[in-house]
Image (cartoon, rainbow, N blue to C red; front, side, top):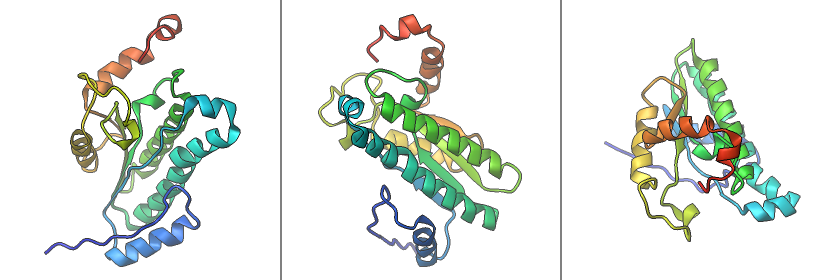
Length: 197
């Protein structure tokens, strides 16, 4: 028999993450898996001109997610089991002109989740960061979403589901992005700066 519980909560502007998480856990009777999947792309041009805009992008994509990750980590460490899966982005692998404030938040998030994974290494729980490439979601509405590099939410969900059950802190979604980003991370800066990716 299955049961679903719903709650409306502004994850990006949490007032008391730990008590909210405790309430969620109590309602569900405990937790085995937590998937954290939210964010905003924001407008890079606006972020360059307004500290408030930049801070909002960083608050939503890093600060608030980090608070939830750390709270979940404490719960899972205490029960010596569970898997935390967090959606990051390939944008965090190398800063690029079009979205480097967003990318900086995702880079920080990846480092945080990898650190939590190492924290868990000897006592049972798992933590993984899933790094999607461009995905057809409301966040990318209005962009030219054609071409082989674009993924569907279902493709990302399959990777996230696998990440919950496997060891290794970093998963690219779809998997081809691991090779793509390996190449991009190793391109000389003069070449990378000329690319429009």
